[in-house]
Amino acid sequence: MTIQWLAIILASTVFMLVIELVRREKLTFKYAFAWLFLAALGVVCSVFRGLLFFLSDLCGFALASNFIFFAILCGFVFLSLLMTVFLCQQNRRNDRMVQALGLLELEVRGLKERVDGR
Image (cartoon, rainbow, N blue to C red; front, side, top):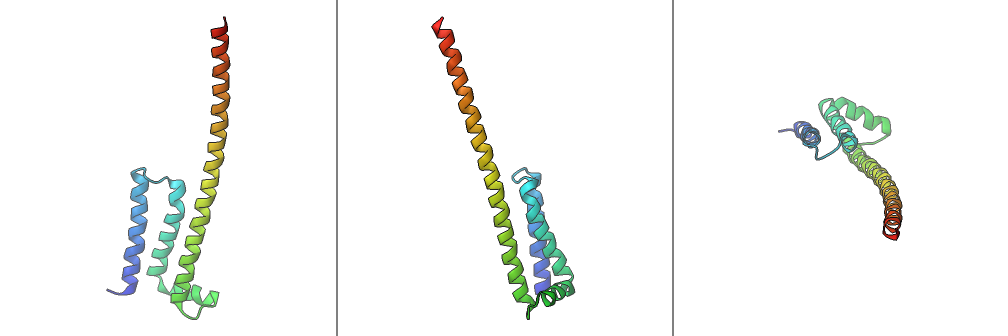
């Protein structure tokens, strides 16, 4: 088995695994999109090896393997940044929900005091 076939199989497996996680609702498409994009890019670069060598030459890498490691590192940095953005959005939503809950509790206490005070 050549490295090219191994790369095709691994990238395809990641792609299908992410699709299956979305299908089973273990992962939302919002989070899966970046993984699907990177897996599809991996399949394309595995099938069309010339594209990989062209991109590595274009970026100034002497060896395609160095470009692959650099691309994987960039992919993980991108995914990490994306997850950080989603985490910050979730924190903001949680803050707003806690504030709304606090206002509702204050309103319920006020209504209870009015009912008990009569």
